[in-house]
Image (cartoon, rainbow, N blue to C red):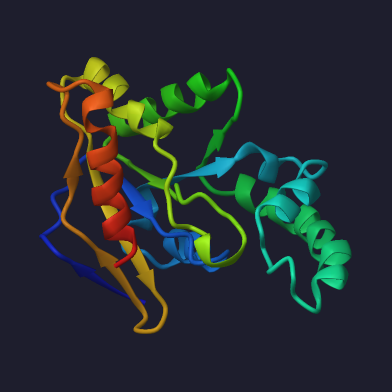
Length: 201
């Protein structure tokens, strides 16, 4: 994988916002991206607990639900993943992502990572079956911009990345900035549109 930057990279705390590209996108960003040594991916907490992995794999559409092989995959892949994924994910510097009131733990840990001048790695696409899969991104995490400004007095810089397997390239778009002078509600849609456009390549 090569890396193409739309603008030269300026070192400092930032967030890389990436298309999922199946299970390969996260793996290759952690293994092959040139800045991987300082990257801390957000990892769904369910993927860190072997007991929770099977249910998560089934709902995350790791295969097409209407596939001919779906019945076989449904009773094999989730349990293989539950044996392999948690120890692998726990072996890298990561940030657990919770879907309940513990989300504040995720955000606080993220701020601490940024304070070390390291980088966050997020895959915010909303999964779904069929042709509408990955057409939208989660935006709640953008509130990290508020917390980062409160902690550092600096705007949060976010780089959209499109993992392009056809051409074997990480395409890094120009950074998108959270504007601390504006309310979250005023810029949420605009930020989501810019980031979505960037991760689609």
